[in-house]
Image (spheres, rainbow, N blue to C red):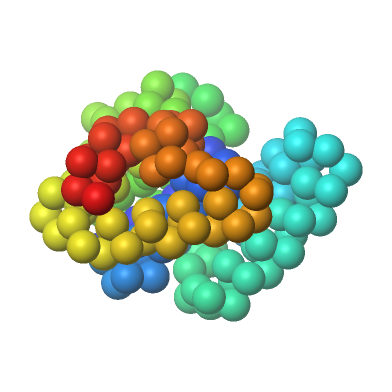
Length: 182
């Protein structure tokens, strides 16, 4: 399954790490565009002067891990699309160009299901997307979450608990499922 990841699920870090950890388990093939990656780098400025350089480093690692994930398209693809926010057309164009089955985004109102369906793309929020994998095969999702938790503890120096970490990352259903499993 090919899945386009919108900027809003690549930044913040914990959500991205869970999504990409599940992809690394072979459960789906992630896709993005240069513009999506650039939006992530610019959004990281919000966390301070170190945010953008850190994001650019993470983006370089992402490119190395998934060299075939970047999709491109002819301008005519984007030009023919309509979405409530004209600035989101590039995301749908990337999904179409990459033959994505699913667009994972937090911005449901910007991507009406009926418009996506006309292009053969469905929409999922990251929590529902991940809980679907967990329900069908919990082990790889649990292993990913355990790894993300260990990394969060190591990098922050805090004793994060799984449920709190995933809830803070706006993955409340996954937090409940994974915490009950572990």
